Image 1 (spheres, rainbow, N blue to C red):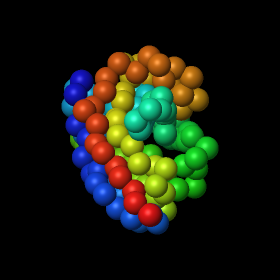
Image 2: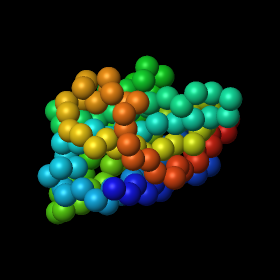
Image 3: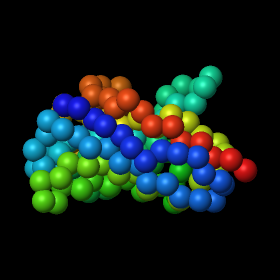
Length: 131
């Protein structure tokens, strides 16, 4: 499995970005059921899970991004792409964002409880939000 992120950049507070993560090595049907997530890490801080998506179609978010970020999977037409739509960005959202995937399926709550077991990681894409 390989994960390749794109879409990061520098924006001003209040603007939007959409991150993409192309996951190779999954069939589109497996992709829809396997645990996937977006993490972020900024200097001096621990890595945190921002959004998690499993097989149930629901999503879980860290409190600081609820209502502003949306995680989604696109497996139509054999695609295997994970997105993170980020709206109303704030300076505190500045970080390196990573796409991560597990080698097991599960409902979203199941995936969120096992985020330390995610085996596959992308190279990261930088998001910088200025005031």
